Image (cartoon, rainbow, N blue to C red):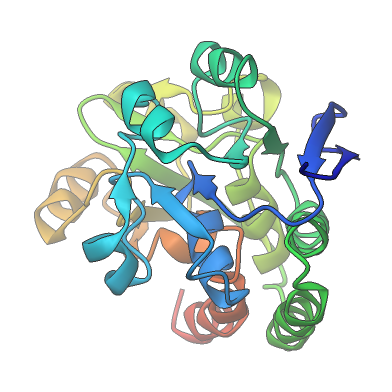
Length: 267
């Protein structure tokens, strides 16, 4: 008989879990990569089609659909004893359906401290506390050298094209932007829409000093810089690695140095 205990996830839900989960499904790319760095290769049985890191898992692990469109039949065949998801990245209806059949532990990440708490919690769930502590120590070391810009700069961080969509104030991305010494202007900071759509006219009136074009989920390229430069000729427009701003697992080890390097370039 499997021994169970109750754990509280980051949404405040009590989740009955096996003492040692052996068949884990991850529904979030950044948390999949974390599970790899926690050394759980043999115990992770399912990932999403967006879980591109590590490459060897992407090639060999069973894929259970996307982060929003989950393949319930694929998950049923895997018979998971732990599913790990995220409040923002996964579809609520799908998660509630999974909860009827499996233990589902959910993260809710808006700050770096939230991310580190999640790493500790998943380390505890999977008996990999030591490696979780090592990861958090490395994250702290990387961010300790991050010196925010002063005076601060207004920034528009775009995640999507046609229509343009930006990171709003209540997001993990914005938390890291603030750590860099950026602030989001005007309506982006005043409303509670996490990823608002913006027209070209709205972008013109926001008039940010800097526009950051993310590599994901939309893969902005050089040609998109030209289109935005036509709207705001004086703005500094930069292509950035979206994983460094939005992946809140072990990828954060690389984020601190990456952000420091970004700030050291002419802005």
